Image (tube, rainbow, N blue to C red):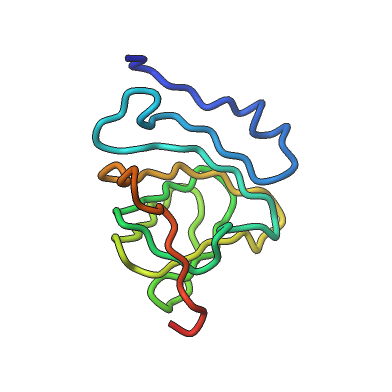
Amino acid sequence: MEFLRKIDFAELNASTGRATQALLDRESGATTCSVRCIKTPPGEGSPGGLHTHPVDQLFYVLSGTMNLEIAGQSYSAGPGNLVVFPAGVPHRNWNGGTEATVHLAISSPLPPVDEPFVRPVAPDA
């Protein structure tokens, strides 16, 4: 097990599109949660639009400002904010700003292998 994991910021910054780095997942030895670092350029966001997950999801914003819709309410989260998406709560995130956002995405417990992680929600749900 690799006990220290490092984000490759040079690789993230070199990407012009949305980029994800897995820091901890089943493949790297996780048994209880997953952690990814995600860069979202201006104008991009949740690939699945409004959706839910079968597990809790947390975002910790490292840089930029993230726009969010959670349970029908709008929010804005900047560096140092922890965003909480409880399992089953409809949400989406996007970057409505002018600079990329970078955040850590933590899922707990580990999502079931045999179930879809992203469950789309109808826009009027």
